[in-house]
Every structure is written in structure tokens, then in C-alpha cells.
Image (cartoon, rainbow, N blue to C red; front, side, top):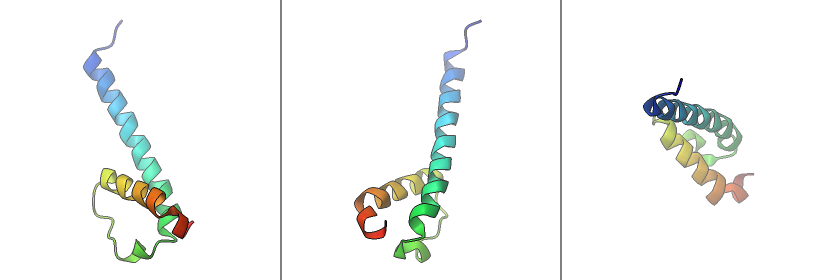
Length: 66
């Protein structure tokens, strides 16, 4: 039986968010340990915001901290 395209889309979306959350958690501990911003930033924004912030830290400032 063929799956409903909407259901497939939902599944993909869910998988993506799970991956993002997992990535954010791993990177958060890796990078924030070394980051002076660690104490200034409260992690109260959503996981996507966190994901982008960490991606920024990892790319733009990785040399300084890693």
C-alpha cells in the first residue's frame, strides 16, 4: 500500500528535527565549553536558533576556540 505523501513529509520533517536537536546537543557541549559567550547566553530559544548559533560559532569562530 502506498503511503500518503503528507505522511511521508511529516516523517521527513520529524527526522530532520530529531537530527537537528541531536546535533545541537553534541555541538553545544563541544563548543560552548570553550566559548566566552557561554555564560552570557541563556539557552532559552528554540532548537533551530541554537542550531544556527552553534553553526555560526563552529564556522566563524572555530579557530579561536577549538
